[in-house]
Image (cartoon, rainbow, N blue to C red; front, side):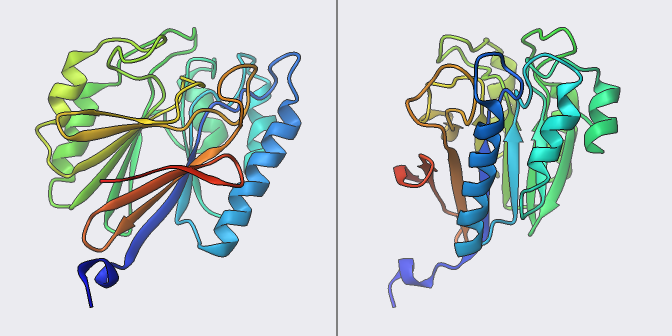
Length: 243
């Protein structure tokens, strides 16, 4: 038996970003219905442990958050959310709706999932709370795999990113950080790399601009701690990568 055949799937999850529920002149209800249906179909074939909605769940208006949650609650697996700059509600209201603070972390199948906000109620582009993130990275040093989810990229790779050198400087000190996931850039569905850490983008499943398709990313973590990932566009597999 070769090494590849010995690998066992340890964790599988989906990531979808930028639904922009309520954006004028878009079919936002259909975008949500289609995304949830397709994620559930993929889950029915090979189950996801969870799904992450990585920011810009709504389009600016506070009243939309509960409506969007009703759509997301149709997911057939547990899910987590991060706050994007179009999610223009207070941190307290965010916690009230989702029962999750804007900065939160969980362990799933001995894998740490760190989710952090990069915005505020005004929609400013912000760096994540690096003090909090360092505390979590220290807490999870004993785990072999850590995945980080933030909406806005912190390296100026793309048109709408910001520059926070301290973010990547922090992460490179933790060899168990296996990948960072971004939303925000609707036209980006590839991978950037810095200090041997992959930074992944998953385009968008809603909104008025971006890639020609609206899809989501699938991530598979194996028993040898390697990762396979690809985009569903939303029904065909594209952009396959491994780390």
